[in-house]
Length: 310
Image (tube, rainbow, N blue to C red; front, side, top):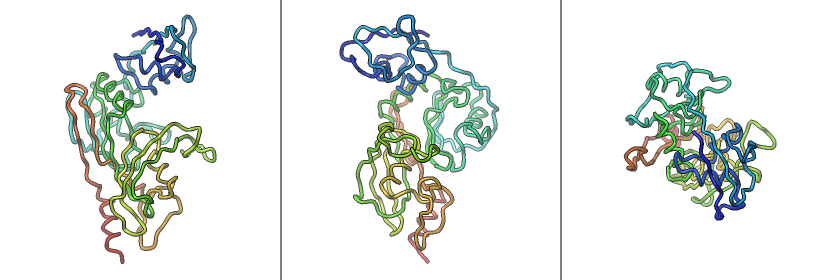
């Protein structure tokens, strides 16, 4: 599929990825998808390939986008237990357990959510996410539990990706953090990128991508507090990085809360983060769908112990 796009006056001097994302209507493409197309050589200006996402566009320029056909998943289907809250011909809503990797990566080539989805869905799963990520529109870290929505076909994938891009899809998390946040509610808007000190970690940095997290404290147990976080963007490790930057890292976080402990607080084997609520517009019906997942037993157990210290 090839799309020709002419730059109008109101988009003059905009970044190329932003301008193209604004112009593509059908199918809608996120800036991340545009950036990937640029990097893969699928965007041309005249006879030349354009790859620079930050290039400033000019009025009247005509760019040509070539959308490659969706890749077919060629991974092994592995029947694994899934907690499916909802499923129809377009989407699946899953309550992911902590410890389950979402898609294959170095060190986790199989036994992932994607392997399980391939076994459950067969050939119906959307291939637009690529061979390694069929159906995956967003992800949760391995040790984060909670709600995910998965696309079963390409139209649903595009529609959900557009909702992530325009922030109409809502995600609310509950987390246990060290200390008592001050103020008890607010917004964290530090840009997030690779840490200049450790490339394996993310950090709040001036050279990062814009990130915004809204939070409010729900209950304090002294050394630990239960807070609610609402994502306005979806950067890697966003909640974990923002709360660590605030000075209140997640309980059990081995990367951003290493060395943190509190008197009378039992150890916790993972970051205490749960994707509790998910709201999106169904790609076929246009109706709002809202799902909620209670805190998992391990987080409930920790709260119980915090409320009844030894």
